[in-house]
Image 1 (cartoon, rainbow, N blue to C red):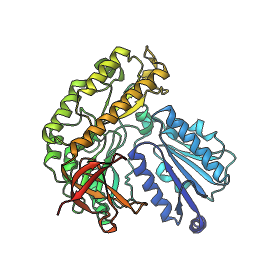
Image 2 (cartoon, helix red, strand yellow):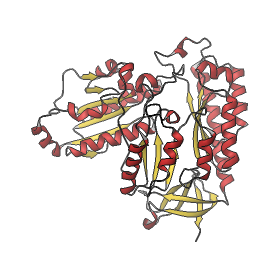
Image 3 (tube, helix red, strand yellow):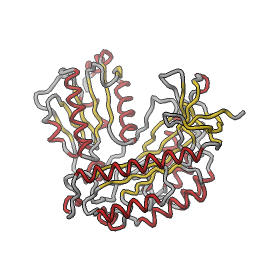
Image 4 (tube, helix red, strand yellow):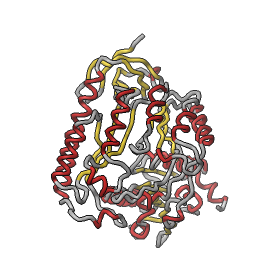
Length: 440
């Protein structure tokens, strides 16, 4: 890169926006640090900037649409700005994106961490430039963790997926499962701890598959991270039920740092639909994982992903799934109406569910989720827990999260921000937050 342009970057402003998963957020934060090293000032995405970076998601058609809206929003804010699009949508549909007015640069999975190498003098191009790669060529692992929130960080421990579920494009967007070694991740966790961050959330596409590149295991990873001084809490993000072993659950139950908080994708509560989805388990395996967690950690939070209206999901299959889900001690559902994605096997499946019916089924599942969460909070009233408090713009109250992911609200006290306190949960307020009292 020409050094005269680097000299000029101290006068430039950059804005970022991120769609999708926690993994995307960790990567955006890392990319933002590379801009800061060149002198850029980071501003809010709604402000005037010289460069806009949009980290996209493509898990549904709605995500693609939201990405296009954000591109147009950036172009409207500053028609002269240099607009960069990265992420899953960029990898899967670069030709579509590069033809959107205002877009200068589209970078795929292997190149998105190299944005600053493409900036040159930030001059707009008549025709944007796209650099993506074929699925088989997506092989780099870029270390990433979020930073900016003193309380917690998202630490990327794995990328890619080898599963090829029939409805999913993520393997095409992210490539094959891969990971760094445990030693390097422990080193990153130690760096995070030195910055004063107390909680780490482990992120990836399929984190339970950790070790494919290095011959290690996810259990060994959390055992290593558990020993890092300064980190008080470690959360495990979404992990496949067939990869959530007894040993992982048992270690979480005795660890002082691994939070009793699990996010387990079910996707369908009917075995016929699970087979159509090409998932790696039957619902009985999922139920056994939930039972194991609750037997060792009765108050653990269990969040569950569910897709509504997958092709081939008849009314009877859906009703069967609902009954199965209702039979489980689940804390919350994350519901997604099925969205057809090009280059997936699911679009060949007969029995397409009308969109109106998908939305109706999703609505029913959302209502179930609201009850699950309300019941879970009621069950926690009277219990004691450790709460890590966060900074708030509203200085009248502050909130924090308990080990088992209960959102606790207390009167604001600056001295307590980014510190953990033992509390007794007393009641749920009108906002759905838990009220509590400190325990001496």
